[in-house]
Amino acid sequence: GAGTGLSANTVRLSPVVLAELPWPAGDLGPAVSALQRGDRRGCAAAVDRAYGMVDRPGVTGPTLSAWWEPLLERIEDRRAPV
Image (tube, rainbow, N blue to C red):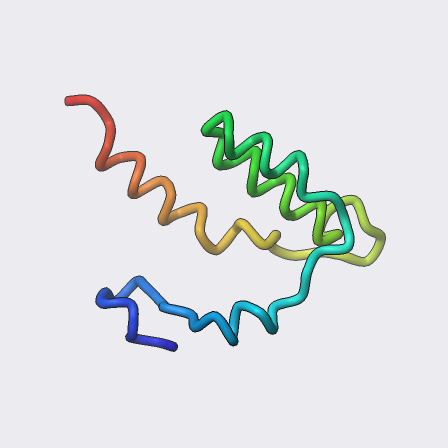
C-alpha cells in the first residue's frame, strides 16, 4: 500500500488489509465518545488503552498514537485562525 495514497505521507489500505488488523481487547466506547466530542488526542489515548498499550507491566516505548501526533499538529497548525 505504500505510495498509493496520492501523497508522500499517505498510505491507502484495502478492505482486506483492514480486516486483517487485530481488534483491541479493550472497550472502544471511550474512544468513540472522545472522537464525537472532537477530542482527537483523547480518542488516541483511549485507543491506546483499548489495545493495552498503557498501564501494562513490561510495555514501554511509544504508544499507537505517537506516530501520527506530529501529523495532527501540522494539520491543526494549518487550520489555526490567522
